[in-house]
Length: 180
Image (tube, rainbow, N blue to C red; front, top):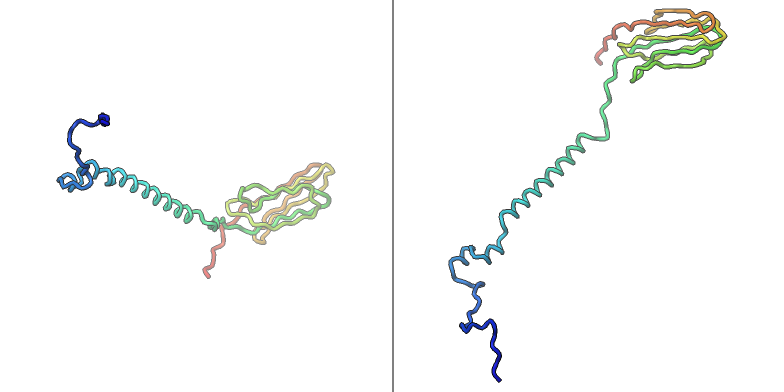
């Protein structure tokens, strides 16, 4: 029986595929299309370098963050202070407001305090020591006294219903520190 004609059969003799072992100069120097598929392109090399650079920069950022944000924070430098004693004498009750060492600089308020009352606190230089007394509705008589570093500097007296008195002073210059 005769064989059916092959549609690809052009009548030309069959040629073996020699692309794998060609002795042509193109195949030897790698310029053939098959050789270029096996060799990595320069674009792939640059992408690898870029990815490596990004990873290196990320690691460096983590190290710098760790160094700058340690758990131990340095102590803030505090302003020098002086010892100030506030004293309120009298009978009964009064509202007392006084200046003490405070980061915000706010005064301390003590409401409805039984007299006599006394406090020694540290007041930063640059802040005026101050104590204010306010008597209640029942009135009476009370006096405030202010001493800086143990030295009395002022006295004031409040009288009557809702009477008020204020003792205030300036702090002397800081005492020089002695080297140890």
